Image (cartoon, rainbow, N blue to C red):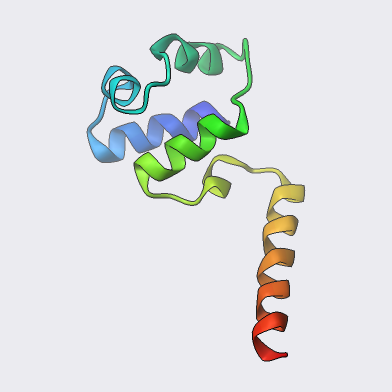
Length: 83
């Protein structure tokens, strides 16, 4: 699932994995490993990609726990602003 989202960003922006690799310093073969399911990305790599593509890091996750955590943080922020 993650690689599909990465691939969609490549298509949307007209970038190649090679270009992203050069621009971000993430080794190009890492993307191939993700595609093949041989490894999962470290959070720091997802942060780099999120900044590079100007998307929230949650974009790369379809995990309900991550979504709930993000929603809770937003709720906490809202409560802090009204307090």
